Length: 123
Image (cartoon, rainbow, N blue to C red):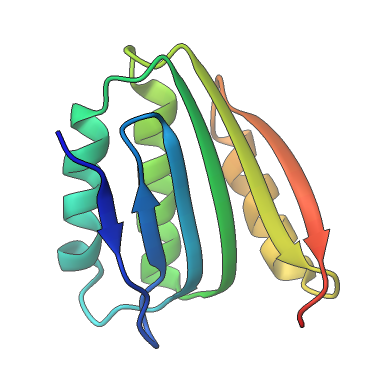
């Protein structure tokens, strides 16, 4: 299994998944074909064999179809029996209450993941 890196575009986030369990999703998520974009991520997570996972999520915008896939992805991580500990840092812009609420809603659908919500100012 190799690390997974996907460069960002105007419609897809940067994905930086490391075998060590450090996972990062940053940018905008509104892909034309969410299934095509997210399926390789699901496959990679299913193969991940790391006792601890640290997830960094810093999304500026997420469309409806992407939000469903992101929830599925995080549930897949949360339910992976090989992973013993899951920590998630959810970044949101100071005035973006929608993104904060999205992160909180996801957190409430997870069983084992610990979450921190981190405000930031856009540069």
